[in-house]
Length: 335
Image (cartoon, rainbow, N blue to C red; front, side):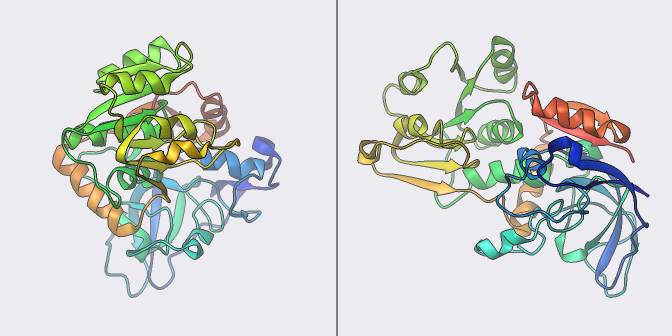
């Protein structure tokens, strides 16, 4: 088979090559999955640039997120069967319980072969059945972005109806957070940079949209939209650069869930005058993935896809994603 692998790490997209690989075969406890679609996440750009905190292995097949069909199983497989439509957990060893940093050391498309190939042999313990109403392209967007948004809102202080959520941008995590927040009866204030994106956010259910380019002091605008109280939940996808302002517009006993710990800068200690919870989100466990999928199935929620590329257009998909003009997920289908 042909698969996109890391030939040189730290070389950006030039280090990603289409290579001839032996078709994988399922070993004991594994299923062979024909991958029909995959989606890109910001971590995939970081891996190519050599900036991802978990060192990737040269020669590994790229991408963590994918969806496909089980076409064969090895011995002692009972969780899935031939014909099942599946995806795989972002952290293959995190089945349930609390997260530890040791679990982060093992990831698809980083330390073990990922989804940018036609076939993948995957341990059955990592596999999750996908909602029946979703296409493979839609289901391929779930493992990282959707589960991260779900974990951000359903963490130690879960979202409640009537609360207000702040989202940042129009990437996958932000849009899933918007959709999940509305599902739970919350109000959403969304930050974005253009009128076109603002219009799309309103269509998707955002109650208020603040253009952070036109409104540099957007934390004050957010507080005005909450009559001074602040928001109960922030899904912080901007990173350390926007974190001080996110904290500044958080309500007492509010939660700021940091998805991307990027950028630099300092935080004024006075921002912590109000009681609040600041937490770093690491996607989620397989069990949480299954819980989220049940909610998606019941409510027939559909992911927002910006564009679907063919397998031969994988590098074009990376470039489109890197340009950061997308609204929703960027998907690579076929193979």
